[in-house]
Image (cartoon, rainbow, N blue to C red; front, top):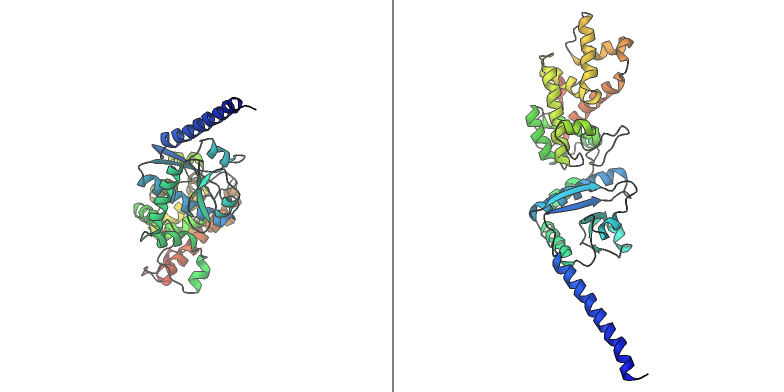
Length: 352
């Protein structure tokens, strides 16, 4: 074959290679970093429920902090049923995918961050070193910050309240969401450890908790109820707690019209949060009409257990156990919290 004949295909090959390189350079320069908003998906379904709930919460709040630090808005969702999040990442439908650290060895079609912790990392679209560098730079800064260990441990250091209380072990932090819970408790006028007990009873501090009826988030609210009290995304810990507190506040206002004792108001409010305010108030109205005026939660529960006509469409035993359990957790969290001056005996008057 003559040199002239070889020259033509070689020239074509060089041109194609140059075009591919230019296309790569254009791609990486036109989308240098995240801008405006980022769409994120958390896929930790391979973890057990408890671990998935806590580590998802950890990554959720880190993604929010990353977005805030870079003047971005973050939309964060869990992997939906049937979704292939890696494909969504490659196609540009999402910007960051939270995956187990072990997955990094089996996914070679995307870019991955440095480890977020020993269990997770963030995956990003392929061929964009600038986005990866932006994420890694922020994660490095976070890992070297004064808050890292405290923040990290609040999600990783799992404990069982009753066993911890019985052993006399004290803690500075009860949950990763202490600050949010304290703010809500101040709004309600409640001891913050009582609100902590309610959150733990509902979700065990897992943002991914979901009931068979469709309630979700830390406060286990139905979507319609959450929306009515301002939550657009119940996966968001702050929105879930705020909406739950607003709902409790709404119920509490109604209970204050019926009961003078703050302790009884709290107990009926907690019961109504579980059963629905209509179920509790309608039974109280029925008793009022019969000339039976309940002055306390204990009176009410005794009557419920005696009179089966009040139990139609109402699982009273479930609600009674719910209130009992929350006050048991309340006692445990009071004993555990290191800075709480309240001894267990001092809160017995607030027991069911």
